[in-house]
Image (cartoon, rainbow, N blue to C red; front, side):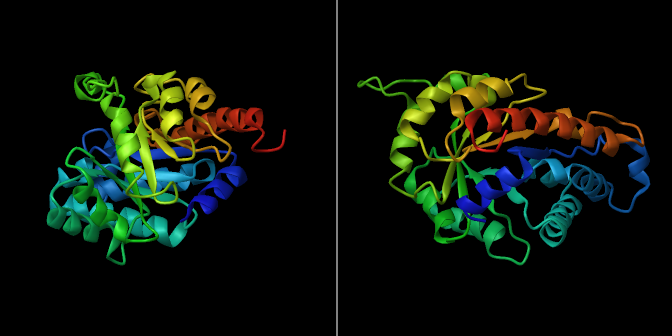
Length: 279
């Protein structure tokens, strides 16, 4: 999916919501444990319930890898289900890969070189250009580079400055734009960063930003929209726990749908205020 198609889907659905599939076997409703594949059963129900209100899904690989081979099979079935039934959804593998070139090449193959493939993968920039470039050889695939994250420890490195006063996250934004354009690269910026989105947009005015941290982590959707939105929206705001674990009864999917709709309705207001959809 290219940038224009993603934007068109945002306008069509009046939403820039990404639902995070952080599916924990210990947190899903107990009745699903009787299913042959509880993880996939949960994901399928969540997807069917929320697809009307979002434009993207983001399975977090850690939750699947923690279960070994069976978890990876659940992940593959989830991606295949999205591809077959909801082809308008932008699928992000939240894997945070990043290693020396030949290893990154293998990581890239695992996400982009099979019948079961995603649109984008999150990548850590710490090891530099040769650790990122292997993901960019696939012309239809996206790299979502970690820039300024929402966790407390982000202050440890991302905010440090060099002798010229440039912060590390700013260096990442500036340097990485030599590797790819805004048609193939996005950035992760945590919702808890608030007005820091103004600084992000100085360096990356045209790029899409994947924004975790709204919902359970306490980030403000209003602030993200005010300071981070551009004229193509430029945002994919992720919510995981606040939607998928909103209820643990047999009505979990119904409640998840209600929560996703609430977020979508708020997003529609911000899109109207920006003039991206009609009032």
